[in-house]
Length: 371
Ligand code: HEM
Image (cartoon, rainbow, N blue to C red; front, side, top):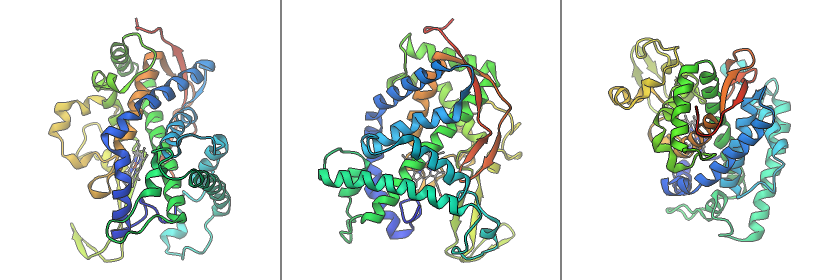
């Protein structure tokens, strides 16, 4: 990912965060909701065309990719979405996988297994993003009022520094990948859990029908009437946090329980384990969205559920991700009943926590208005 908001530290991080944060303000994110609704409708159409065996992750990736392309680059005319999506998958399956060599502190210039394949995937993605940036530069500033426009205009208030070609490329690349893959995984895991829990699914569907009142797809205004569906997503991300592991470089020596933490160490925060910790969660491996009912949530320690991280590096796209996931899930539940149509997938940690093999589901059409 090179040097981007996600990988920078200190002053280099701070100015990029300040430049990018306005794009994700509540007002601007809400303004994107109609786009998310249209994406949800397209997902319904695709699923309805072949409902017996839905490749859920693939469908959800396609849905969320639509939206991030619009937010990042105002459209996908410079993208071959299929080719880009295929390159992302290749990347996650190769370089994304931590190698034993990483833990043995072998220098980074020693090629890791799979890295050669992964490099080809990165080259494909970079070429496509660079083409989109060049097209925008040719149009001039203010052409689209999207993420790329903001990045082109961003300036460090202290040094006057602007983003150079590499900053732009790396940030756009990161946003396109991180801005859709994680959300698609959260949705896929949620649908899988609901398919295996008909009671919870019926409750969520009743809520979706009531919220939509016979309309075909959910809008931002409908979501206040669907709190259980938000709970389902919170619980799905507890059991299967798309980002299962956080890492921090140690700047100053410290002590953590009986451990000395040395400067220069890397500390990993195992979010997946935290979310299933037996001392903190009752029946930690069971799916129970009521854990996130308002009263239960208020009674719980804030730092036990960290799907979006916490502190200054908290996910800048959390509101965006939740709005999109709620709109898509509410729409899908109003339109289909989901049943398992394949083996139960295993969570496999690449850079994100992916279900392997696919989440195969059968989608049984529902009638608008419910039963
Ligand atoms: C369900 C979906 C998502 C999950 C679970 C998720 C999770 C996370 C987590 C855990 C972090 C913190 C990493 C750390 O502390 O080291 C993070 C950071 C970040 N996320 Fe997300 N994310 C999601 C969606 C998005 C979306 C939609 C976008 C943008 C469109 C986005 C952009 C970012 C960026 C730019 C950072 C780095 C922030 C910084 O370092 O200042 N994420 N995300």
